[in-house]
Length: 307
Image (cartoon, rainbow, N blue to C red; front, side):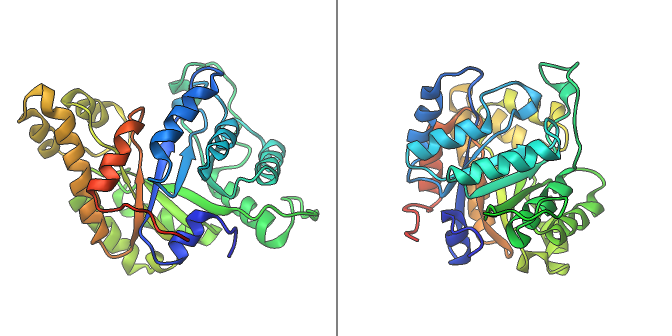
């Protein structure tokens, strides 16, 4: 085992993995994280804690991970290269491992101009690919970037994100291949609404043999309303929401749109379960964590395996 994390054991054991997500609060109240943890405990195998997502200041991912661990959940530390140089990145990896974190997701981070501090200085000392290589080097070689030895290397299960829907489409599988070459262990994808396009992406992935080298978890986000669907379609870069999905939500009374959105999410999971090369799903409920248990249960993914 590379890290011994529950997520690694689930995936290497051949089980269909389920990961969730917890967005930390825009304040210092730990009970916000604890409340979300209660909805996810026993329902998912590991929980991503976002790192100032959309470049908006929130409680740190590191602190959120520790709060989840106190509640008996396994966290997945998200780390973006936007806000830290290589010294801070490596320092935080050591600290997270020392306190029990065993999974981490290496990300670029949304550019600060889109967040609530648009005049902030970015860092990007490393890019996400270099962060992957750094974590792997720290784990497998026991060395920092400068080749100095680490007395106790952090044994992380290393994750990355993939967006099959960003342009140019023909480059998406190639970019995933670069992350595989950099040493990623598991990949979580962007929210999937266009399953036909995702199938074509996965065919490219299978043709390149990448599905045999990395665990791929399909991203699933339930729609709450037609308004959310239109927002995701028109204002979120790299998102592909087909008009059929929007029309399906429009076709039911407003009071039933949340129920329809959950039904679409469950159908998406069912199709992903049957797709060759998919090792699990990443359920990103976006401030709707209380609905994750019913989604996972109705998708036939409970109880979670004992590993």
